[in-house]
Image (cartoon, rainbow, N blue to C red; front, top):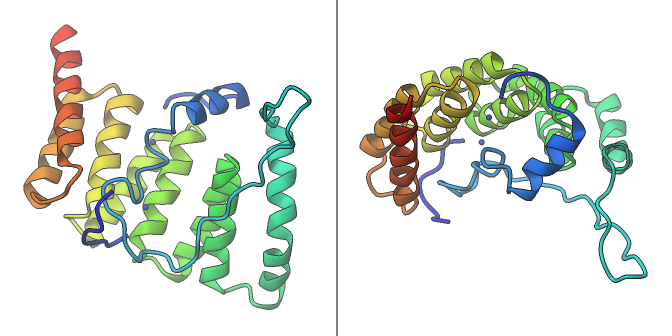
Length: 213
């Protein structure tokens, strides 16, 4: 991924945990977008990682259940939540907690903390696009679109927001024409991004879908 200019960080009914795991296996097309097209210093806090599951006698890492992932996230978040009791308006800690829950696929909880952070720092495009992806995975497609459109009001050229907007329109709204428009706008406003060939392939796929209707 390119170390490019950075300003900031996707369908239908609410998805069940088993679907969430399936998305994780497919690399969560949208969830990885922050830093996928653009990587930089958007957040000074590292994205926390959930500890790996214990190795079984067969040498494999069993997939944690949805509830186990939540329990691990709650445990890791506890020290940060204690900090928030003393300093509830600490946007950095709020954002850190949000990333932690997102990494555990607890998208509703993550969106809530991103929302609190954005109330304190509404121009944080990274947090806003991250919140959009959480809303998308939690089944709130319109909410995700709203957050991305708001991000683009702050920066009409933000690559991650434009890429995600295309994904949400394509996969969430079954609107390949809208997706193509967003991605063409992305290519026009960010012509030197190293990942632009990925966007061009997505445009081709969306165009083929639209022609197949």
